[in-house]
Length: 116
Image (cartoon, rainbow, N blue to C red; front, side):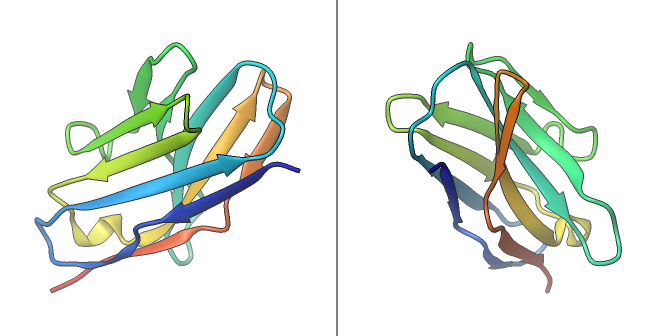
């Protein structure tokens, strides 16, 4: 059974930084794309960043230049380094695993609150 467990959420002041981690466990085969999504209250889930198995990264416009996604294939970890945080970054952040565009798994989410 595949499991994703996020960690690192919390409360941070505007302009601050926070690092999220996602640990993946289970029997996983195939090409994997890891991603982070977020969902603020009353809003739809929003894609934040993605890293493919070849290391190629991409970002949503709202976080480009402020967030950085990275992965450790040997340890099945994916991190999201967030800097210059804004109140509008407040949301529950979810880790996502996509295997060959066929199977998709989600973590339980971790709360990030940006507030003074």
